[in-house]
Image (cartoon, rainbow, N blue to C red; front, side):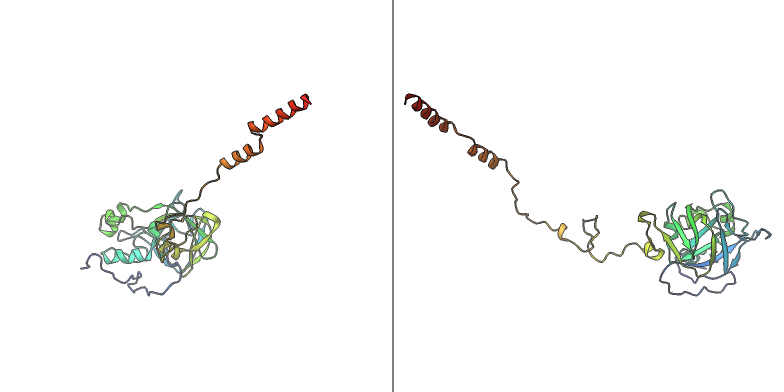
Length: 254
């Protein structure tokens, strides 16, 4: 019997372990779908693995019986989360958790609504909301949905169609500033190598000068007194009027 929290290899539907590979960025590692002519199964989700497929705008995976919903076109989960759930005794082979796509190297469970993922060269999906599980999930897993709360990935819709293949890179499209970064970099968060500076507007890591109390030199602000003094100097003083008046009077006397 599996112990809670034990890490076990992620296996495919044939029971073979999925080989781990080093990745420099996020990657699509599994595609499954339910063909329209496939019979429903009481033993689990009916899913057929694919090496490549086509995402259809406003539908989902081409030919997928589960596509075409008004809001949700497909489900996406993280490979790392599936591995952890497998260690807790969940059935976590590709498709067994009800997902269509599995991405490695991206914290799928943390993606907010509205986040967009580019898969391959042209396909793009947009996160709708987190998955919460349902009665069908509990029936197939034999577990309560609350046991996998906040770890069931996200529901998404296709906003740009295109071909996708297992091994395709996945990029998280950043709306602010029309920038793009690798999904793995964004999933792991910013790498801060020193104390965080208070200068958040320029984001200089390791600058602790603003955190150290210092006695700043006192700088006197410009005073208006000198200007008044200059004005007073230029203006005639009361005593300066007297000689003038005396001179004028002497002129009259003369």
